[in-house]
Amino acid sequence: MAATPATGVLPAERVLGAIRAGIRYVRYAPALRAVLVRTIAFVIGASAMWAVLPLIARWQLGLGAAGFGLLLAWFGIGAVIGGALLNRLQQFASHDNIVHGASILFIAMTVGLAFTHQPIIAHLLMAIGGAAWVWAFSVLNIAAQLSVPRWVQGRALAVYQIAVQGGLAAASALWGWVGAEYSLQIALWCGAAAMLAGFVTYRWRLAIADEVKTDPVTRPHPNVVMRIDPDAGPALISVEYRINLEKTGEFVGAMTQMRRIRLRDGAVFWGLFVDANRPERFIEHFVTESWVEHLRQHERMIASDVVYESRAKSFHLGDDPPVTHLISANSVVQHHPGSFTRDGATTQTIDTELVLKRVLP
Image 1 (cartoon, rainbow, N blue to C red):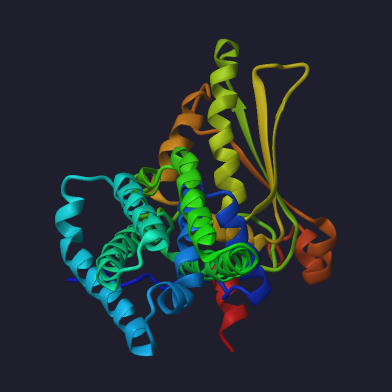
Image 2: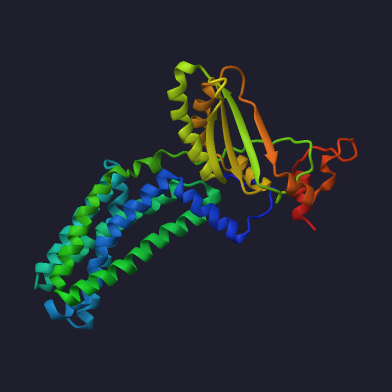
């Protein structure tokens, strides 16, 4: 039975804020960045074929409109065959190797089109290119979806589509200009060379996307005694660590992963500071634009993040590191002036009821 998605109680993100959150996630998500880099590396060179194929069909192969349509049909036949073989291919080849193999086949097709004057050979080359195209983009699509959690998946895939479609459009214009200024063959050779040069992106491995565990790990919202409007902010959160001085280097190295997680999930600033008088005392600070953005951080953590968080906490001497939540005083006074009164009538614990009042009429 399919799992029923949990219904959140936080207010919906505003459009501009959601866009910023998506861009921020892409910036600090290594797995998704690897997919985007590999996609652009493939698209830039592969677009040379699409840019000059109509002219190759007419001037080099001597084909008319029907002949050009037949070329595309053979590309489609190759794509269907490639799609049928993809599952079997994935059983003995990694995603990285499939993309590399598809790139090699597409390079061979591109170079072959630059030399051939025989329609039959061109048809076979197009079929090979169709299979390579399906293999590459099927794997890249899968990696893009596996690398991000559900809450940001739509925005991440939108960025991925921009990389694909934008790369095709921009690079096609470039190869069209090269073909007009020099020759169609040089445009195809340059496209093949660009795909070959794209192999330097091998260090951005798609295997990272396969290893990301995107299952949500929702943490309880913090309890505070002040009445805080969800839009109040900025919010400053600090986490205090006491560590063994002999493990300072390891601790600072582990905290670099926490920096990436905090910034990816909503922080606009992150810093790690050490007490000059007590060098075993470290303070992690991060700032969010509003209180509700920090609450969203509690809901955006994924299973892979727990590993890094647990490692960071393992250096702390004692129980869990104490966490302090600070909110802009001016913002609190503006939204709820009575929050600073310490009597029982005005002091309360913030919970989901406040957020629901904001959402429901």
